[in-house]
Image 1 (tube, rainbow, N blue to C red):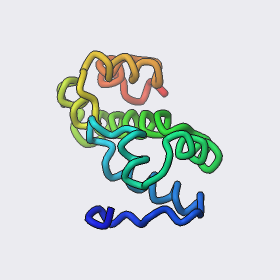
Image 2 (cartoon, one colour; image 1 turned 60 degrees about the vertical axis):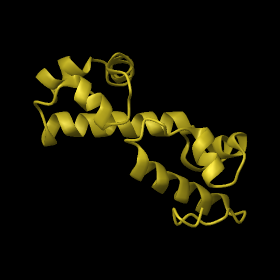
Image 3 (cartoon, rainbow, N blue to C red; image 1 turned 180 degrees about the vertical axis):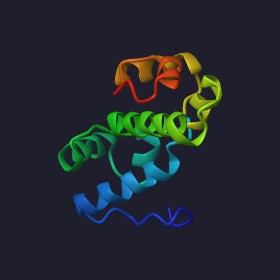
Length: 124
């Protein structure tokens, strides 16, 4: 997509994954971010994208996006906006559902966002 400044995929998997991760890094707040959408933007097959990400960065598309979102959420709770409401935080890092965000956060961090907010440096 020339409007997005994305080059057509040329066959270099390393460059591809670098471009994909740059795209994810700048669009992680979008709740519609998905492997389907990203693969289409880069004119490649979803399965191929997933396989290349695993090979190049050691993480699947979903794991990369999830880790990025949770990392950003922790950053916000630690430094940027420690008093943010959990529902607002969920939206800010790309989740439509506060409940789902809280489940994913607890699964990755070991505490709920609310518990983490109270003791940010006592976890993970």
